[in-house]
Length: 257
Image 1 (cartoon, helix red, strand yellow):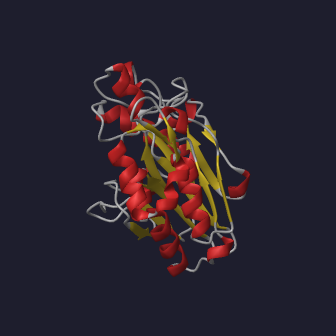
Image 2: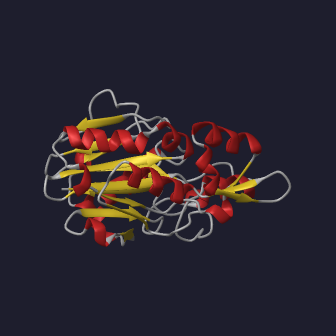
Image 3: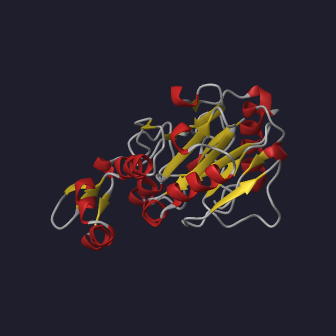
């Protein structure tokens, strides 16, 4: 089956209008079993050739050759890298990608963490970041913006959109998790509400939006899709863990000039 014969479901944002982009759901992929759908996770135990086919379908949807759909080796860090028309060799260990090269699509993978797409339309600089709680706390969003500015973007002209991520009602954490955020900034308590017993519920997207706005971007929003709560459309690491699944798929989010 060719990449052109499958109907994918990229979610888009008006803030990124004019840029080809998409927060892809699991629909339209070739994977089966627990990975059913558009699993783009090379680190999963899915068949490598099926993952490659799924990524080829995404590249076709983005209007680029497979080699120009650039991803990185994500490690929950605050590192952001600048790329041109293909992935550097060896693949960088980082969690955000920035480019100003037309015709290059950049993409990150998630399964509850925040996928964040950025664009300065006027300067022609885009970025994609993987921001789980650790990366967001350590500054991956701010670092992404800094690299965009180094590439010619203007901070207040940057639009940033958080795609499908785990919502507060599904994100239960323990006291030690709260303590880490309190140590960074006591005001971070506003992103937590009481759960059962000694547990708390953490609002990851609201925290991400706060960090983006504090960093000075012009506009920022969350698409308000919860990965945990919609198994038909999204993979979720936490949901898979709760269900006792052996593994889980990864969603892909991409943008190109």
